[in-house]
Image (cartoon, rainbow, N blue to C red; front, side, top):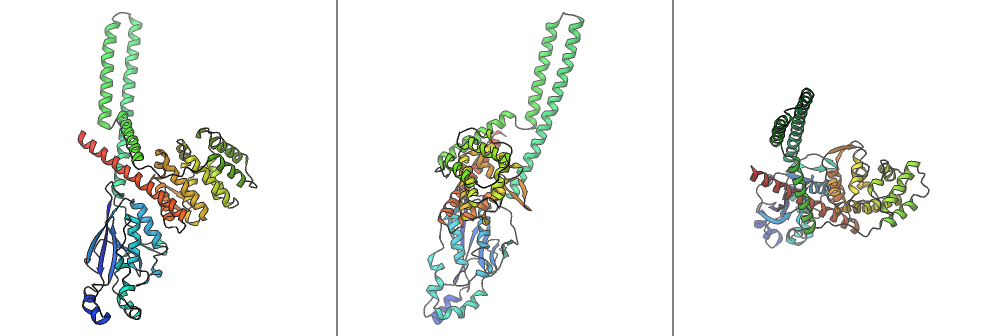
Amino acid sequence: MAGEEGVPVDLYIYDLTNGLASVLSPAILGRQIEGVWHTSVVVFEREYFYGGAGVTSCAPGSTQLGAPHQVMRLGTTFVPFPVFNEYIQGLATTTYTAGAYRLLEHNCNHFSDEVSQFACGARVPEHIVAQPQRDLPAPLRTALGSALAALVPDGDQVYANGVRHSRRDSPDYLTLNNQIEEARVVSQELEARRNTLAEKLARKERRKEKKRKKQREQNGGDLLEEEDENMAEAVEAVEALEAGIARAGPSSRDLEAEADERRLEEQRRRERDPPIVFRDIDGAQEFEAFTKALEGVELSADEKQSLDELQQYLVQGEGSWVLGDEFLTFIGRVLRDGGVSSEARVCALRCLAAAALRDDVSLLLHQDRRQHALLAFAHTVDKLPPTEQLALAVFMCNLFENTSSSEWLLYISEWESDGHTLSNIRVTTKVCVHCVLSEAPALRDAGTALLYNVATKEKCVVAATRARGCAARSAA
């Protein structure tokens, strides 16, 4: 993922003629040109470029062209690797397919220019992008096209016709999975250790209680001495328990302190880089529009109850506790039922966008762990009408208003939907990239806002992780 300092973005510039253009151009063109340029973007320790095989990637500098003629630092990206990877997929399956490649009109330099803008806001130098029009007269373009095409490098094809052919894990993917597995094992050991110590302490207390009861029955004397002895044993047992827990792992107090630290770090981040949310949404008005859009739709008794619960939540201001167990089943039906109008789906999403601005919406989101109704629908973003796409993007942006709901969007645990293995972060990434690539200005703006929210959230997580690591090393 893109760390707090970001990830460098470089432009590799190659001369396809390996110096011949400089020698032969005076005789062919009547003037000298330095080279015929091919470019690629190097980011996340991978080189990405576009050619006749489509979007391609390889280890930096490993194409048949050899070392680049020039390496230009374009800037630094804070875009998370999953978002960048999804963006590359979007380009490879839309505007930069193998069939769309044109050596002089739609080529590697146009691809590099677009990717660099997305990654860090930089541009490929104009003299490179415009070279065919500037340096090659029209009569020579056709003649030289086939010769130059043979010089364009190949590599491991990333995507073709929407199917992924090679996959490279995120730079932090294996490390992250190892850390998760280690944390899970430590947590299990800690829990087992605590349970064992608690059971031993409980058995010891029961034995002492039986002993005290028996002694009280036999005689009423010497109780004070016995109590002192028992008190000393109890103190020793408690000390042993605390020592055992300390050896097994962090105590509950340590975990609470860590959680407080995370909340403070999140608060500082939000003050420094506040999320982009859409506040011009009135819950009461959106609910009224939703009920009108549902006119003519036959609702069951449970669905009518769910609609009434939504009215209590959005209009009357009740807490999310009023939303029953069947509420998300009702929302799922509205979002997926072909008999429900697109207008009703837009209204439902805007109601959810209004709910996302409330600090108790996370209780609703965690009810979706069984059906995944919300994000299973979001995964179909590329098949939705533009109005539904925009409403969905606004809803997901507004979830960054609160820490817990934003973290829900970035969960990495996997689940199944319609034969696909998904996770919350994968769906969030897909929606983000799809909207950023949209030609509709409003949808592109919403996608950019979502990308910003995801990137700043990732940056905060990395900073907090590093801070905890430094603290742990200092304590050791």
